[in-house]
Amino acid sequence: MTESELACSGSISQYHPDISIPENVKYNLVCTGCCGVYFDDRLKCASDNALLRANYRKKQLELKKVPGIGRFHDWLPVNELITTNSGPITYKSTELADELGLKNLYISFNGYWPERGAFIKTCSFKELEAFPTLQKSKNSGKSLVLASAGNTARAFAHVSAMTGVKVYIVVPGSGMPRMWLPEEPTDSIRLIQMGNNCDYTDSIHLAERLSALPGMQAEGGARNVARRDGMGTVMLDASVFMKRMPDHYFQAIGSGTGGIAAWEASLRLLGDGRFGMKLPKLHLSQNLPFVPMFNAWKAGRRDIIKDIDMPEPKKLIHEMYADILSNREPPYSVTGGVYDALCATDGTMYAISNNDAKAAVELFERLEGIDIFPPAGVAVSSLIQAIENGDVKADEHIALNITGGGVKRVERDYHLYKIEPFAHAETANVPLEDII
Image 1 (cartoon, one colour):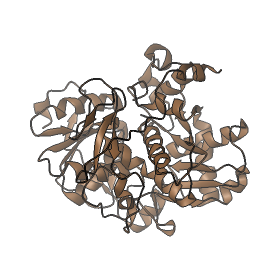
Image 2: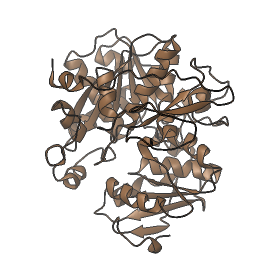
Image 3: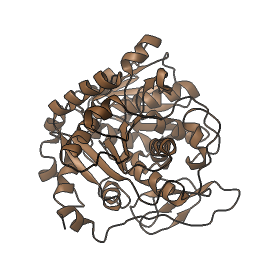
Image 4: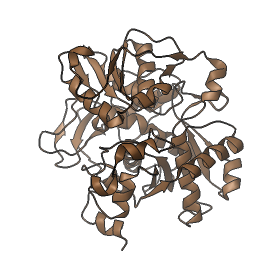
């Protein structure tokens, strides 16, 4: 057995609850640790620290006759149908597939590419998280608080501008170039810019403090089932398009929430019974030199050891090409998190260099005809590495998640507006009265 296989022994595997739900209830929440059941919306189990997972009453997916993410309403934790043309799209690759010698390479494109039917105007699959999350919170009477390295902030700001739900978004200085919208920003968007020495984790800590104030509500990050199930629609769309689950699923990760989401969506498809009886193998990748989850996984450890897996983290993050893939506190070790997702799917991880990621970005645009974000280049590079290592076969079905792209294309159709900061915070410990 490999170190990772040994490490996985005794871990959570294909947990798929079959708990009856009343006819008038769409879903409940089940703890992946103690199996406790909740019918209220919450972020944490009362008994342990494990992730909660949405358990839907409908076990077979019935697509709604609407465009975008709303097609997957049955497996989204919202009661009102989401009406937007924003959603994942899947197509079968020819050019990149031929270049890599693959017969069944499917691209899950999450960005703006109207010629392909892709209308995510913020050009990131983070928009798939924003729609269900803000829909769930719009009647709470509270402002939503979240942290972001850039793309999540843009996505939530966009949906806030569309819905009027007030959001407080904390972003490190390095994320400010990503703060643009395809429409004029509204007063519902409260962007807080942190100092240049702060990173994504600093933003998380400040957001946690803000969310504890009266009238504020924490967005929840990886613990928010709306975010995970929104991202999980990528796996649903790919499987519906292929009429089966893929053999392999490739994605770059920062927090790893997208990897967890893909696993959970696969479990639901497994329970559906019409998309195959084997979970897709997760191929998750990080960008060198900041690769804490890769380091822990390759060492066969459930826990990330900071001094070993991410020494001098801010220095390492500064050296990344895809710096958005940086989270110093990812949901790797928690029950139901990244580690368990990798174990359950016989998955693997990759550490991709800046040069390889940049080359993959150029290769994809040249062959497929659309620009992509650096994180997507990391995913493309991991696919190339997997082929070189003999980890995928030429005729196997592969889903490649292009998590963001099409900025050059959206600039042709829209005027992009800069989001100006509502307040500034040099550190995560700034007095809150100075920024509210």
